[in-house]
Length: 224
Image (tube, rainbow, N blue to C red; front, side):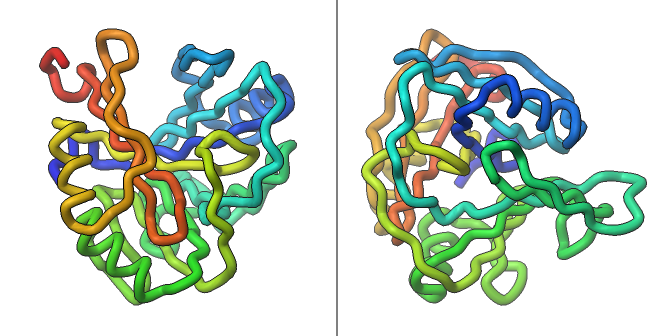
């Protein structure tokens, strides 16, 4: 997979927008980047985390009562910390701030609960083409995914409470989307154009977790 940005982003949906903004921008100390409108009454408030983006989505419509996705918590490396610092946002989403390099995290780390370690490992290694860097640990650019066994229920949508999807920035959304499907991945949503700067799609891992494949002109330097 040809990355346009060497970091993964994480997308979550929150119920109380103002409380969530205060937490991620205040308690967690992440710099605010900007707010984008995704359509359908969804605002995306973007916070920066070592090159990754924590994409805080808020919907004007009530969120469906979906079970938790496999993305269970995030770890963000922070220079100057002496020890890990565990936090929880107003919606109950866990965040761990750690000194640089703890558990191999130099930027952003994700703990991913999966039903089948071997099947999910093959998916992230062979289908998504992430680098295997340890036992059930995979790296995409500088971001680290750590798989753990557990129970995950398949959901029909990437729009729901909590951590819902990750984003991989690429040079060619259509080509990478087709490549994932050709290597055995499952389609979540075909490539779609948003405005004149973004083309995106979704694929799904063996447990149905959503992964956004995004092509942005700000990273590729070329028009869609």
